[in-house]
Image 1: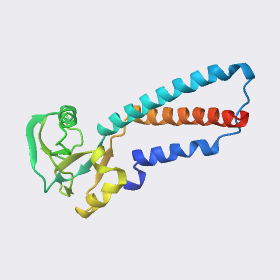
Image 2: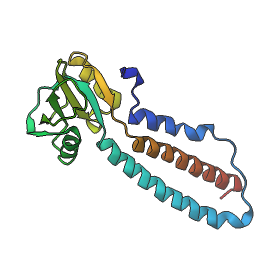
Image 3: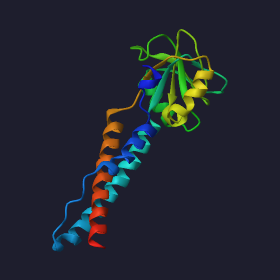
Length: 189
């Protein structure tokens, strides 16, 4: 995929921050519903925090897939396994910033010999595929580093459906909280 088409977490969250600015005027509540609204607002705040925590965890498990190999860093571990097992291993080890393997397929059907690395600088090379932890790439901020490595081809950006759903839910929760705050300000609370 072209780099311009990639959606990063920071871009997604930045666009969610704009949602409250496009809201319509809040709907007035009858006088007796103030306590239930406060309880509902508190429940929404707790749910919002839980969703933010879940999104942060999901970001830590997302990967940028790049054509080339990870160079200039120490090998953390080497093993023959499938890509899903490699992701699980890398996610469970803080010193693992990504992994690389020989081949042309992004998700080979068979097990491959995976080298787990302590860095994320990618050198372009045919016959190699690397998975870089999204938490290490900081979205487009790291693409400069990747571009300096000889313009590697970005194969895929593994944003999961769950992370996009969580970001959407965060936006909805922020919208509701913003409306509640507007109502409270309008009443003079």
